[in-house]
Image (tube, rainbow, N blue to C red):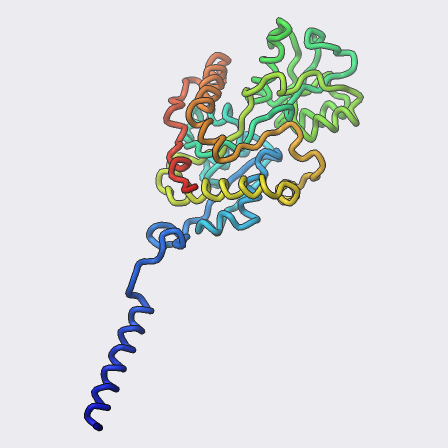
Length: 338
């Protein structure tokens, strides 16, 4: 009896050891969906992004501050607000940041500046969020002739202005351009009464009307599809950090899903991230969700990028037309599990 009892005890000890070893590292592999630190189980690298103050970039703050990036293993996402375009470009070119949220036309100029990029997500389109502020004596676009106009030259504002002037049969030589370093500065110049008109965006459009003794001459509602913002990364960084890029896209998908179900709370988080007021935060702006991104990357985003590239070559702002097809990477959108 004692011998049988000893054998039973030994068998129980062996079984216990097997179970213990299985729990520590054996058995089935972890569910891939729960492995949120990339395929190799390593913590994902820090990702840094720069942008200016524009409500359409709000989903990046929403994805970060609601923890959607962290859920995808991307625990460290740094978002830096730099108002000047030249300074943002310098930060990207100097590897101070990995990516930039900006308009497609600006992204078309980056390769000419020696910074090839990969565009992975369309953030928003301006539908009234950009416009031209004008003094009250400028009743229509034709009245712009001979007037002083503040704008950030060689940017989206430049394209928007010339597109608007064409409607009235005017060109760049018919106005007096006052260069400024940002569209915010253009709005401030108008409010201060230093120029007859300014090409700017919200919240300066509202401020200009309320404080600048002027009116809105034209907005991006009248130029649909012209101004589109997207998230792009230096190509060298994107190519060597595919898991981080996928985590960025996955997090933005979740952020937009959250926004559609919880708009009031989402707007509060986005506005706080950009240090803006929540009232009329998304006025004149349409944010893109996952399904809209899928459709955009099938064609429209390429068309808008091509149009911008052609414009900048024609105006001599860039020396050569970039290969826009290589700039757009839809693979991360296609890999989203919905």
